Length: 294
Ligand code: G1P
Image (cartoon, rainbow, N blue to C red; front, side):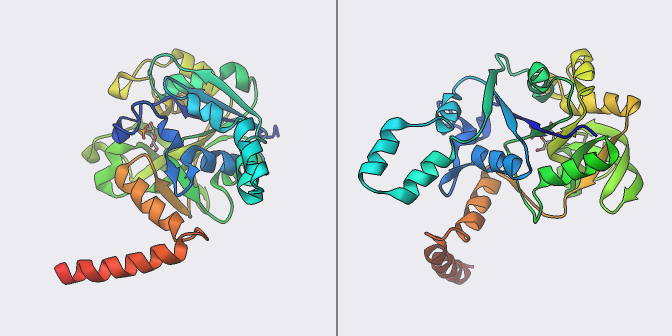
């Protein structure tokens, strides 16, 4: 079985949900406490054994490239002031083998992934969406890689969502259950209306794909929102080789949404050694005050 070595991170979206913050700044650089969301995503890939990553960027995304490059002046300054732990943090972002390509027009997630065709070549690969941060004992990317090692098939990460939310996601119509948390799939539908959704099993932002997906993407006409949808190409792939759905047992944090971003910041803050105690005390005090106002 060919090992999965490469990852693709689409990061060309306009970030309209976070305007005005994202007018000149990449939404992927918004921090959860002190770390940009895209760094969490890259760390998940690396912790899973991924060796090379392509980031598909667009306008106003240069800060992503700068973040993962060395910053000589800053490093020298921290060295002079003997701020070793900060220096280590700054240097940690430069040890990753990254490639960048630009998607000039926002033609959809499927089109962004198609930009990775020559980087990926004829290998299975993983797509990680920056809006979804995951937490589990084994990184979700590694869970998908283990499923692929055993089956050789494409595998998507999924989780159950409330019925009212199905129109926000690609939805899977699960068929036979192969083993615990692994399904064959009848159909993949991008953002169906609640009353038309075949289930509440939603695609979340990790896709392990065989390279035949590119043939499907090249033929794929625009779908929902008049964009080339990755889900539609996966639906076509599933007709020629099975695409499986893996159900996440851990936690997904939707950092592409304002409320999700805020709750994720609080949860990560409660684990951050520098701020966790103060934050906890603040939250206890705040909740007391809020209760008296009810
Ligand atoms: C994208 C995909 C969708 C998937 C979702 C997961 O949608 O098109 O199939 O369920 O990510 O976060 P977006 O969130 O970009 O609208």
